[in-house]
Length: 112
Length: 112
Image 1: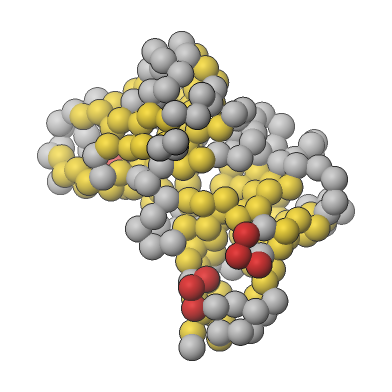
Image 2 (image 1 turned 60 degrees about the horizontal axis):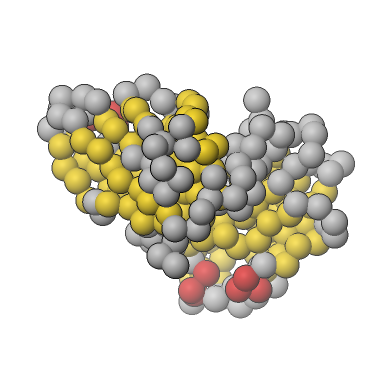
């Protein structure tokens, strides 16, 4: 069964600092990878997705992620975070069976 | 487009009661799914449907029932509510199962 591991449950950073949220997936066949963001008391919103092609994927709000097949990773990055980026971030894998498997989430807290 | 809508937003039940969580989408998506979100657990798939008349179990199906009589609607039924079903429930839809999923705003359910 496919699995998604988010290596950090919480990441505190200061405003304007860079951030990386780590994600590893387990699918051995073709992968569809996603990052979602959840603001407090809201549903999930897609940040970016990798289906094929360029391994560097750009998303909304200045986020980007890099697909690394050899390391089975899909880390999310932003060069300079804002207070408004405080939210929970979920990595997900569409894998080979057309069902999304989510990681347990990383809570990003941006402090002034 | 309203996207994915869910009702109710909040619900409190007593142990043993039954209820139906409603989900509808107006994007003509074939794939719909129900997740529950619990602290530190990420999102776990309860049931999903790949089209009208077709449903299947996800990771945590026990205690829940679904049906898909139309493309638009995918209700989730709790047959006999238990405190372990206290959670936030999200409905999602997509063009196909492994693709980007669009999420509803969620239903926060408390079972006493």
